[in-house]
Length: 309
Ligand code: BMA
Image (cartoon, rainbow, N blue to C red; front, side):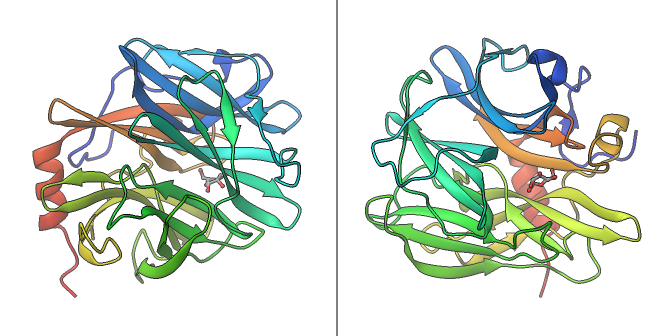
């Protein structure tokens, strides 16, 4: 085991593997929220024919999960909204009593961001896509900012995207998006030198918005994915207050190093409870693990390890 920063890995990692769903080749990069007296999640399942599907799951403790073998079927009132493409990388955000669920639609014109709402994790209503292609990384803020819904996203290309900066956008109605602002991009000579992208929904803290994001480095042997942390201004979340120079989590464990896409930790959900953050992250595009950090230590680490320039 390599050095750990403030995140401590759960000893029983990985907590979810392909064995959880019939026909799964892998289960990774997925979304989890608190729900009722336990947890609910939307899981990315890459099937054995390489169709990428999404499945609902429930858990009492957030560690042992029952994942529905059936693919989520969404209701959609508008036949012009695309519903038949491969789907991947879900994220979940609760705003008031509604869960907003975004994912990447693998459209013929390139990846773009789809969105649906649910209140009960039984019925899902698909709405307008949040972005045009190409964009495969999007997360919605848990409350309106200055009266508008808000999101971070990372425009991309149709392939494996050897670049990527993050942008902030706002909307009065979750359909029409504008006021796009650059947030931050890559840093040379770093684990975040190829591309960066938003991870779990931003968490509101005293100092601003705490964001866990992924950073990618291209080695002589391909991409490696890491997790970093940033704190952004509360009223103007495109303004960076702190952003980690050191990574928070790196692919060091065998289940993070070995898999369908080696050397990946991909943080996609965070549950903050009792002063702790539990991160759910995809490992090597094969399985899901968790790691916990004390919120006070996490904030301290981000502030202390921030770039000075
Ligand atoms: C995400 C997805 C995956 C990819 C991954 C690394 O953006 O596009 O398919 O392999 O990054 O986990």
